[in-house]
Amino acid sequence: MTAPRWIGLPLVAVLLVVATISVQLAHGGGTYEPLKPADACVERPVTTQADGIDGLTERLVLIGLDGAACTLGTSREELTLELARSDEPTPAQVDALREGLRSAVAHMKADGTLPKASTLVDEVLDSADLNGLLERVIRALPASVVDGALKTDDVLDRTIDELDVRALLDDVDDPSALNDRIETAVTQAVKDSLRARLRDLV
Image (cartoon, rainbow, N blue to C red):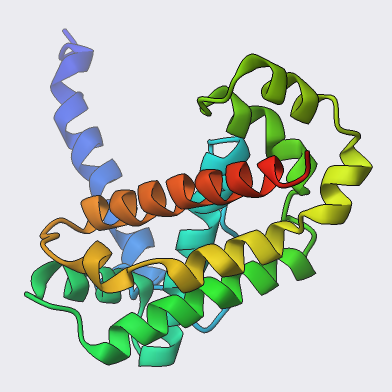
């Protein structure tokens, strides 16, 4: 009588494992090196799930952090950790982040991903506390008028110049909270700036 088929299964399994390990070793699987953070000075794609001003500021912050990290000779991830672990950001870190954000604006303008001001008007007005008549007048402005009077890069540059970067970086001990804090502050500042300048158009 022949032995049941299942008796040979453990031997087959062992042979498959040995074969798999051999293939991995032959292709360099015997050495392990942790992945290195991306070089902040090398452009990498930045995508966001958000739309409108939230998406704009998320990209702005990520590209800006890359620019700051490149200036400081580190990676975006390492810079974020350093900022989260330190009691107070250094003047060099504050200056690098502000300049990184300004460079991000120029980068997005150059690659065509900076939205026109007219595409952000409805979102700004939805969160504004304006009287009904003024809001209707602003919404009725042609896109060409809004875009002729308001340049998104100009609004962002002014926002970044007025941003209290040091205050944003203080008292943050979690890297993800750091990103969220900067994005929230920039988003609100952009909305405030656009709202104030839209009022001046009417």
